[in-house]
Amino acid sequence: MAWTAPTQRTTGTLITAAIYNTDLVDNFTFLGVNHDHSGDAGDGGNLVRSQWVSPQYVSGTGAVLRDINVDLPAARLVNNQDDKVQFSFRLPTPSDAITKAVIVFMALATGNLYRATDVEFGAAGEAAGGASGASAALAVTANQYAEEDISSALSGQAVAAGDVVGVGWNRNATNALDTAEGDVLVFGLLIEWR
Image 1 (cartoon, rainbow, N blue to C red):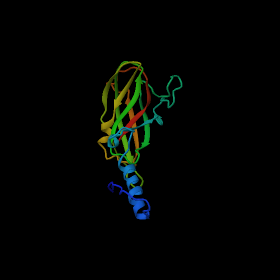
Image 2: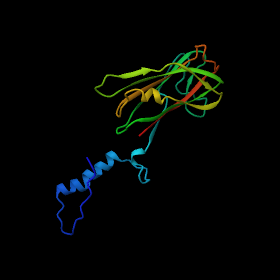
Image 3: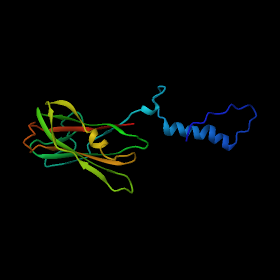
Image 4: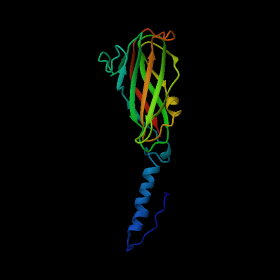
């Protein structure tokens, strides 16, 4: 559907259903589907939306979903064991692409975290898709907020508008490459899309 420039009407012109549908309904639909605005002229196609997703599930002996010993709600992944925190969200419709996906966390010790990201996704009537990311070491500093960009784990998949997406962030603390000898607090997952 394209934009139709409204015709100049004169007093006494009978507004028929066809005129109303073309001048108003179709054009408002065009604006609503194809243009989202922040209020600044010309930014409709580039408006970025975001969603914060709190941890929803943890696995691993001693892992805690809601640690009440910190000021911000956080999942606690325990040192010296393999733990996982999971998130799930629905990518809204309409959306063109995920532009950013970061895990926000804090390591309680300096060193390397050895971790990997798993992704599963799908919509009603579809088979689930997904992939496991390669494990790698990530340098961290004790008691500093950190972000790990996991955008490639999502954009490298066929995640589409309307999909339910599950993200698992795994810390493999028993691996020799994990040298951060402390727990990790995971605050959430920030997703941005346009």
